[in-house]
Structure formats: structure tokens, C-alpha cells
Length: 208
Picture 1 (cartoon, rainbow, N blue to C red):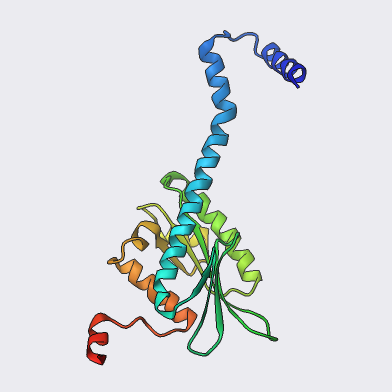
Picture 2: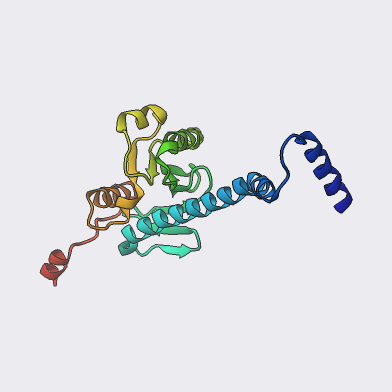
């Protein structure tokens, strides 16, 4: 292994013999090879954290229906007596569907989470979300949401980048329970799943 690596290193140096081989050059050379790997790992970690955050928001929205949670999958029985599954998947990131015996599962919503904070690259990530939503559409999902993690987003341009996306949400707003986006997201999830809205504190007091 060492002999092979030395031979490759020698060939590399032979190809750049016009450059000055010093400590700075070697440091930059290592960054060229290791930097992208480290950046990719960091992006994956941020992406997984973003998906987990959205998953937890969904679980909190449905908590009053007492879902059975097992790792990254949760199940509950809706008002029609049908089993609903919330699942952290891959491509798209989160799917919610109604399980039906015999007639096949009924897809409810596919959610793609783009947790990167780089505004300059957001439309590339939205394009990636569109690819995932097209796969979801092929699986008969008719509702697709995309969640981004940037503060500035041109709605018209985002809609062009991902025409399959029905709704865009900002992750930072979903994490704020008092925000309008959080309220709309929760209400939409509850409606799609088909359970009763969580009773307010005043309604519970009145009932008692």
C-alpha cells in the first residue's frame, strides 16, 4: 500500500514540477482532497438534523392522537379508524400515508427537507427536492411539501424550480411554535392525517 501511494505521489509531483513544493503547498494540497469530504460530512449531519427537527414537529402536532413511536416511524389510528404511518424515509425525507389492507396504501404527503443555510445554493437544493417529489408522485403522492432553511426565498422562482411542490416552509419558522408557519403546518398535517384538532385550553376547561 505504501509503495503504491508513494508511486502515485511521485507521479503527482512530476506533473506539477514547476510549482514550489513547500509546507504551504502541501497544506493546500491536503485541503483540496480532504476539504470536500469534510464539507460533505458536515452537510449530511445538518441535513439529518433538519429532517429530525421536522419529524419531531409532526409528532408534537399529532401527540394528542397518541401515536405509537418506534424510532423513525410512528403510527396512529385516525378518526375513520384507519392506520396512518409517519415515516422518516429517504428520497423523499418524510412520508405520511394511510395503510389500507387489500386496496393498497393511500399516500397523503411527501416532505423534502433542505436544511442547508447557503442562500447562494438554495435553488440547486430546490431542484434536488423536485427530483425527490417526482419520485413521490410516481408513488401516487399528490401532496408534496418542501422545507428550506434560508431566510430569503423568492416564491416565484422557487415554484419554477420545483413545480411539484405544493407548499414551501422555512425550517426556522416551523421551530417557532408561535409562528404563523408553524400553526399552518400543524393544521395541514392534522387535516391530512384525519384526526381531530387538538383541543385548546379554554375548550378543555369548558368541557370539565
